[in-house]
Length: 169
Image (spheres, rainbow, N blue to C red):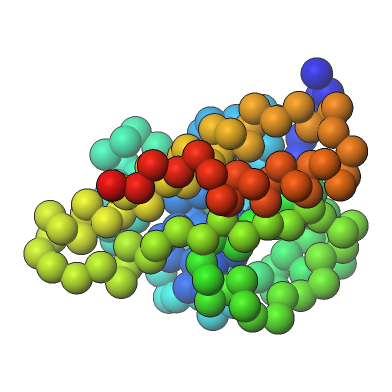
């Protein structure tokens, strides 16, 4: 297995829930192989409190998590991205910056838990559902044989992950 660490960027409009969860999940799940980041086209002032609450309940570190602009990752001094995934439909339809190095990209649309209505229990349930969906996709992703796939095949595999392997309930 390669000793290379792959940089992954998760994009969403507000960078307060789904993209933050994906960043935290991947860093916990495979931090020795991947370095995950997240950003938004119109970042919120702060990470959604229910995102932080859920991550802490699951024993995932939240230190350093913050809402940030995707401009931080488009500059010359930004780490080159190997993969860029949009996790919300709105961000997927927005014109994105040009990412240096031509990363593999895919859309992994996930329902927005921050838009959930209802009481606190119902809203937390929406956050848990988004977390499970992202975790399932990331389990598939980290098990891809990256060192044995050419770019075209890898592109197809990460796109397919966005369409399969998700058990929504």
